[in-house]
Image 1 (cartoon, rainbow, N blue to C red):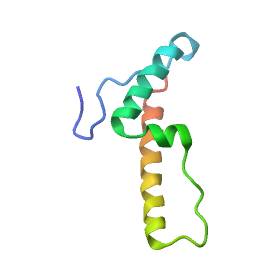
Image 2: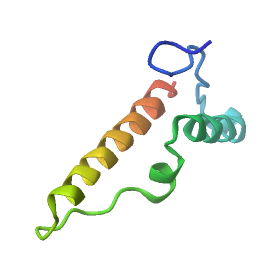
Image 3: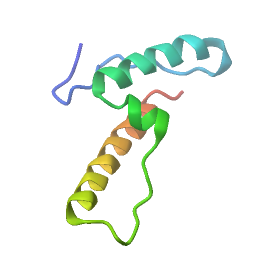
Image 4: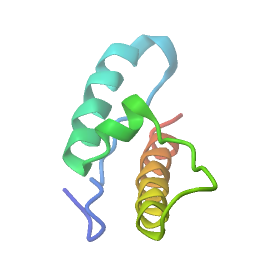
Length: 78
């Protein structure tokens, strides 16, 4: 079941080593579904002082995506 925010109601929970492989696989699918896989795997770039307004806006969007990914990770920890 998926809530109004697009986040499934039954997230996989990491319980240490015993379910690590299954959890990683499920999280990868979740990140892919949410459009977060790139930021999880590659991170976000550093912002320099010579950025244009468009680049700053794109950076802010990257920060939002990164925050969504971190939120999901925190929700899936025991």
